[in-house]
Image (cartoon, rainbow, N blue to C red; front, side, top):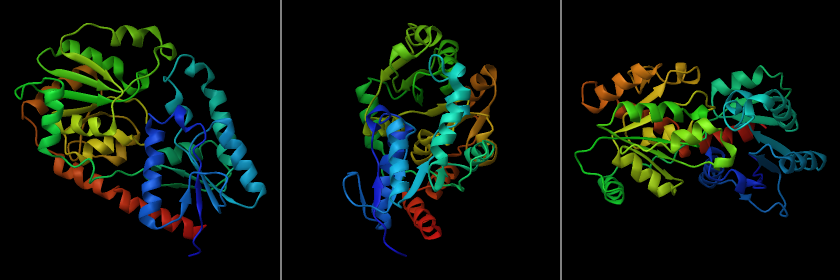
Length: 333
């Protein structure tokens, strides 16, 4: 295989570095290193292939300029119209325009990579003219491996007794992520501690979300955005990862939780229909009542522990596996 140098374009990355896209870029850096592929983050250096991860205008300009120079353009499709809805104030209104824009951006490349078969099917329905392949964003299973020291750090930091059961979630303060149901469950279940890690500028979110996160409940906590290390500690120190998202293209935080061997309860949505079999690797629920029942059963040890099978799924998406698959994609090119 010809050893091509990759430009991992980071323009406007600061706008999304605290999101799953920012994490995906870090994973790509790691995958390229593991695969032995030379790469740069400096667009002034020479390169043969450019990786684009955002749909901001500067990325589109980079795509068009690269094509004019005969470079190969790989567009990572992290966004769909479906996961743009119910995200920020006004997002539903402009969702159709967003779909047209991302279609235009993705079509400017030579190849589109998207994290799952589910997101690939959605994009194929947009009438894109470029080939689409699915490749997981990947997970560093070594980093997120469960350990007792991490658990202790989390419990000590937030002064949580060993006897308390802790439910966590990770994501932006947006409706799509299921934050309203998370708050309702905390209100219903005062005997458990609920922690939501992540942050969104309050000017971007509707009043319903603002009111929810300002609710004064002794068992509901919003620590805000924390470091990758602190998120890892939270996985290890908690008793359940509750992922109530309504729509995803993959869900990197879910892969992290799998790697940390924490019990997982997700909303039963289309992306996870084939990705996870209910009660085999994760538990699934559809309503507040069902979530409440399952949370109690999981935390009280009334249901089988699925964490080893979940961990094996994380290993299948380990960054080392992703790196080899990325090499195969280059060879196809």
